[in-house]
Length: 310
Ligand code: HEM
Image 1 (cartoon, rainbow, N blue to C red):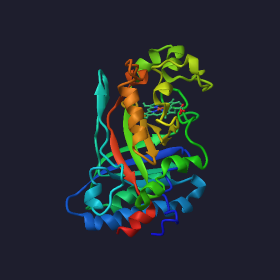
Image 2 (image 1 turned 30 degrees about the horizontal axis):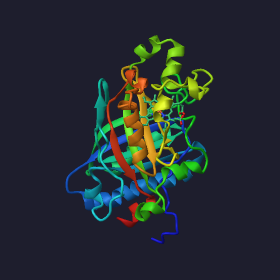
Image 3 (image 1 turned 135 degrees about the horizontal axis):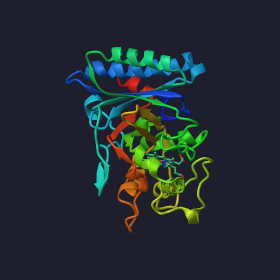
């Protein structure tokens, strides 16, 4: 492929927020790679085309390949930074790794369309995969997490979403692709809701109702915002694009946390800062109220990579 031409990105990687989402986690059957490659490309192309057909409802999505499955599916080339999920734990704070071979992420402002498409995608993969996990996400109030705090405010905006989320010239074969990290967090909402609002705000580092960032000097070192707002060795902000949404039912509910990024380092450093904390051991107190049930690492290649690799 001409390295000057930007391969077509999968539209769900950088899309703006939606009202609904469906997450499908598959494991592949053994020895089906030669059928899987065209099938994965077909599914990605189908999702890409539906974004036009259902543009009124802002349909979008992507297909991502698990770090542990990548070499089986595409033995000829691997994204430079693709590695298994960086599992970590300290004290009661756990970030376990649960990997899947394929992740299909679809979002739309109409749930009926998503339901139809999810069934269709499952049908397209028939005989090649086992569906291991499925969740449905939803917009809660004015784009709030179930803790009641607005989530996504400091996400990159406009064209900088692409700049943050998509691999560029640094890894030419994978230009237009994205490193994806997913953690299914189950919240302990009864514990959280017993916490006075001011204390909740100290945990996040922003006010609850009107979503105003604390002044720098007022941000506790243990606040979520403080822990994830990182700079690299040159003083540049380390950013990710978050595509998270609340999910679940009365029994189990929380946040499907989804990070998309042009590298895999930024997410890992943030998670380390949350779990291990700084040199003084100031870790993220948000983790006292939520538990990561999964942790999975994927790469969502450009649509053109998948079509060329068929
Ligand atoms: C910011 C919630 C997990 C990275 C925020 C904000 C909320 C929030 C309410 C403030 C508003 C905003 O800017 O979006 C949560 C919840 C989580 C979670 C409920 C899990 C239960 C994570 C994880 C990471 C992360 C695992 C990365 C490893 C970030 C970043 C920001 C942020 C980078 C923006 C910080 C800034 O620049 O101010 N999160 N988050 N979050 N979160 Fe999380």
